[in-house]
Image (tube, rainbow, N blue to C red; front, side, top):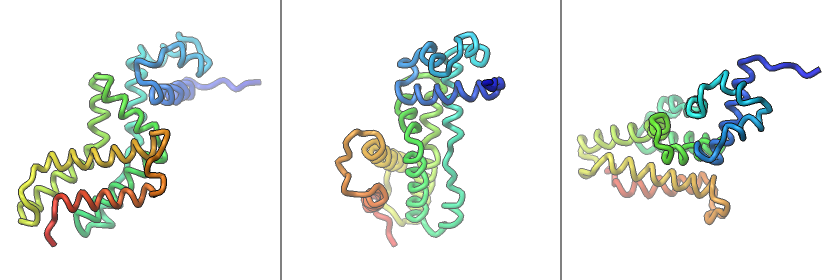
Length: 201
């Protein structure tokens, strides 16, 4: 006898299937029929849990947002300077994407979808990084340890560097840096970024 799923379990199953499909094809590339066929329910069952495809997509984004990186240990344990903390935060972030590549796919799709929920999801993915970089570079400038630079631009550059690394290592079918581990590549890219901002010892 097949055990019947509770409403909560059914909702979780729908979200899990939708996560995979939306990550693969984006909001517009997935139909309700495709989702219900893979879950094994009727559209009416799905609509009992979600009023529309948009509401289901928002629930999926919320679920992905719950897979948040915790930088607390990195900042507490390595509170010995901008470089060390930045390297620690980056390793935590990279590790989360390597273990959950659908996060990166959803981020890419979310930038194209145009909904408020999508924009918020995209911006929040990088907020910890940009906030940390902008705050600390502003402090370093005030202390005279770096030349006057546009700290927002520096944060954007760093975001672009790390995103490109993740695209190359986690999503592209061929890895042109296959001879270099992702950890080594991260270290090299961070070193180049730090050289660019030129922190005085």
